[in-house]
Image (cartoon, rainbow, N blue to C red; front, side):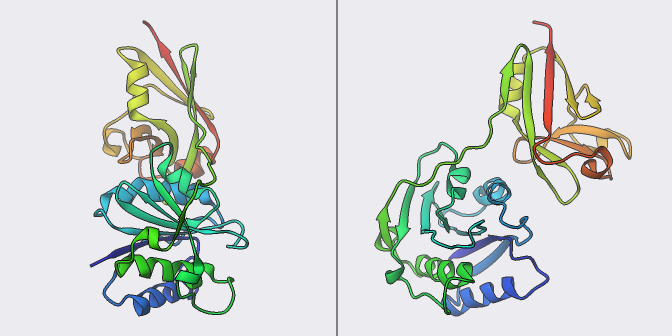
Length: 261
């Protein structure tokens, strides 16, 4: 039984997400649908890519992932399918797929829309009318390369942390539902640079001198740094919102200074 996940900016207040799911079930009744999020900030492909790449590997190989976020509203965009780590990703040609795979190897095709049965009139609801039929074709066993020709896609890159003069600099890339600020600094990179040295973390007016293992390692209302489940350094407040209480925003800079040899 095929699994299709949905990552969109359709929201849950209106009927759009339900219409998309109903369409998919009509096309492929035995499919299992999983909502990753319909609350991506409007047109924010960076946020969509971050959230999806944080969880897609939890699903079985062969899972189909729809990324329904596009600043151009699907206008003049090719529809693509990417095979990456034995998963399938469907998205417009807007760079979001390169953010999901980063520098890793993948296969990508541009879908020949004459080979799928588009739904509805026009591209205004493109995630339903164009992407749902593509997902249904894959779910029903159609080989990816039977839907189009292999291409080279637009390449967007995450801003990488920089390290000079014993200082590691990164930025906040996502604020989650709890107000936790997730950065682009990853645990493996931090541990390699740190070695046996001490350090201090600076973001806005906050200074931290340790990274905890659990939120409960500090008292209620305490600020903390922690590596989240996806390996990214996170700034948080226990039972509070770091975004609100510290005034943190996406793209705010965070620095880590290392001391000693």
